[in-house]
Length: 114
Image 1 (cartoon, rainbow, N blue to C red):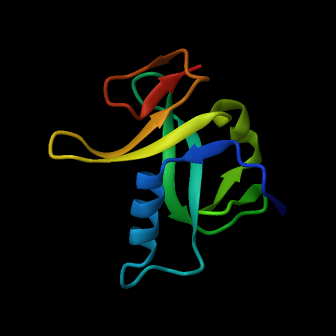
Image 2: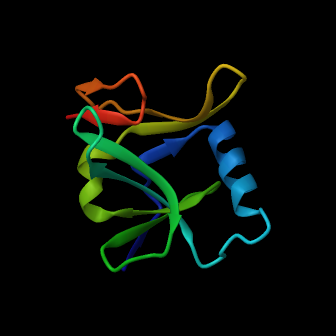
C-alpha cells in the first residue's frame, strides 16, 4: 500500500474543519480514513465519493499537513486538481466539488462527465 505527501486534491479550510468535526463525533471508527473517489452513475455519468472507509490494497494514503485521506490509485485521472469545500449556509449546505477535469456537471453538484 502506497503513501505519499503529494496530494492530487485540495480541501478548503471550511472542508477540513467539517471533516475533522465529523471524525471527532462519538462512535466514529478510528480505523477508517476519509475516502475521496468516483464511481459510475449519476445523471452525468460519474459521481463523487466522499466518505469514511477502511483502507484497501489499491488505495494510496495521502498524508497532508491538515488532513489525511485515501483514494483508489485509478481515480487520480478524474480528480487531480479538484478542490473540495464545505458550504454551511442556510440556502446551500454540504460539500461541493470544483473539478477542472469535468467537461460538464449536473445541477446536483455531485455528478459529472469527463
